[in-house]
Length: 120
Image (cartoon, rainbow, N blue to C red):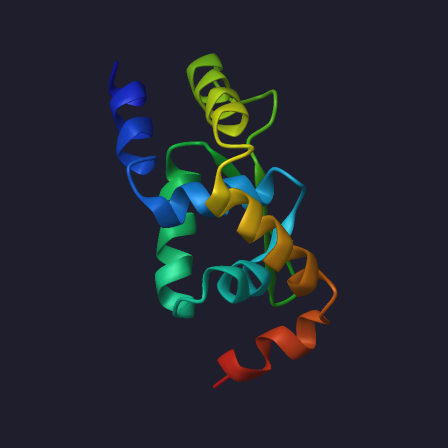
């Protein structure tokens, strides 16, 4: 039951749901998610950490880049089923459609270009 409750807390935030919907098209770099969501890097990073902690996303690091993808078949059934229902339910939501269009433009940009303004 605790897993289910944690999942619902994680899905109770529009930003986290938007990030998950964006990842439904495939793996994205954190800088791409930052650009799409138009939030501070630390804010997006915290949201992604919360999603990772409940098992909704997987993260991999490649050099200085952090890439996220949706949970896979190794994920507990309750997590996978909840994620699948959400993806189907919101596939044609106006916010999802708008984000999908913005994401297409974001994905055309070079990762170096996207992350240039976030470097110290």
